[in-house]
Image (cartoon, rainbow, N blue to C red):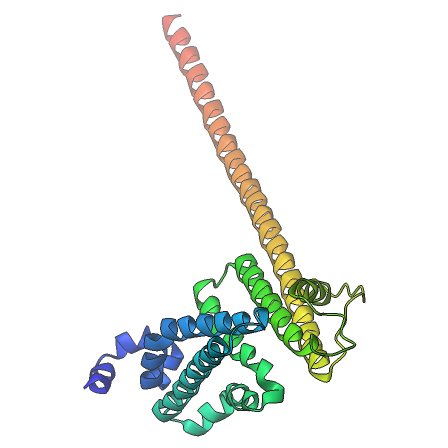
Length: 273
């Protein structure tokens, strides 16, 4: 029934985004599960942070936290399967969301479990893009804070058990994250494990990308602002020229009136004589 109504109302369909027209079922599912998936992402990140920052928690509590992470992870997997089932063109959906699938499957290997935070970042990033579109500074600030926090957690988890590690506390991990993401790189802290270096490589790439976005946004802002000022000056100059033309016309008409008045006075003086 919904498809028939959509087909019978081409004007309404024209107002919908392209993905809603091409994949109506998938689009409805994504809209309905948008906030619940964000809530699950935040819950997963909180549980992951708790596990990393409290390594000495009781065994029963640790098992409870791990179970909570697995439940939320299963929800991510179920969401992917439902989207795949709802997609009309499943081949295209599979290709477009191949990275999402890899992020879901690879962390099942314990050596790559830190990649779970990538799915959290992807989910929160999609929501932030929709809600903060156009507010570049706010979006970038939130993205940098989230990326830095998760990267610090991930590198601390894989580094602190190494005997040669220099990153052994969350403060060390945060400092290393800040110097890495800003490309400063003091070198006082650096990962020594393979997984830690893998996280560092991803953080470096993300840092460079975000710096590029920030630089481009600032440049775009300056161009827009100065372009607006230039347009205002051009408009003011045009208005001034129009006003000056109108003043010239008024002066000409005033001169004609003066000449007519002078001619009338001469005529009146001649009639008196």
